[in-house]
Image (cartoon, rainbow, N blue to C red; front, side):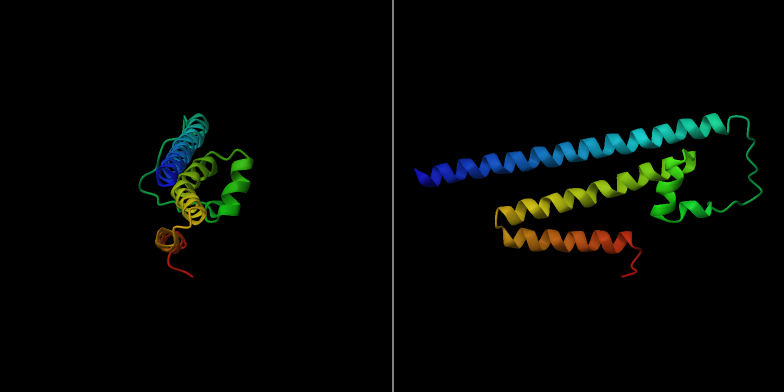
Amino acid sequence: MTEAKNREQSAQSNHLVEQIIGNLLRIGVITAASIVGVGGVFYLVRHVATVPRYALFQAEPAFLESVAGIVTAAASLRSEAIIQLGLLVLIAVPIVRVSVSIVAFLLKRDWLYSVVTLFVLAILLFALLGGKV
């Protein structure tokens, strides 16, 4: 009887974790898309009459080179920074998902999956930092 009860609790726990992760992914992607959309509208409104000059290369502005610069410029309603902020949110979604999975595996005392998921998180962070650790 207790074995069946343990399996039922485990199934309920797995379902709850799946729901949390599913909602996290859904909300994260919708939030990122909304931020990019708002930034895109701002950009189009601001640059509606601008004629692109394809022969001239323009590097990205300096404020888009760091997370702090992007956040500061987005708070000032700079359209390019708002779009970049949306992309940063989109990049953060899988990292948060893996972090939530680590917590779930640790709470279940599933050490093998915890270690594997920590390894996946380390790879994600290493790639995000451009291999500069």
